[in-house]
Image (cartoon, rainbow, N blue to C red; front, side, top):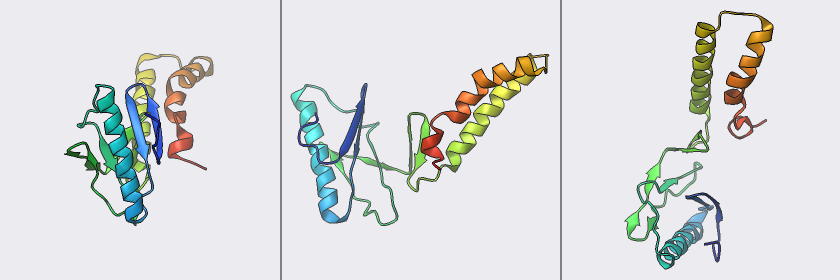
Length: 146
């Protein structure tokens, strides 16, 4: 699968991501060639990509918004995609991700408040550290870089 791919790509389990820079027609052509190579790889290995889950996320103000094909199917453009439970939109604004994180942590805090009678530091701090903090810190470097 890795042979001849010009853009950056990553694989995890049954998930493949292809990234490319679409500067001018050459950039768009390069991305399309990579998609063709991935499709050819799938054909040679008697497998196929699930076209319902294959999407294009166009990033940047000057992006030409080129329409890409995977085999004979045109890929759907998406305004936002979730990856590793982090929601990224086409402007890379993480407001929605922050709101989702706040909602999750408030739900967990509500459960702790409702079900734990003690308010002592010795009880609440370990619960917070184990149940709330992981939601707040999950991939914070990605969605809130310093």
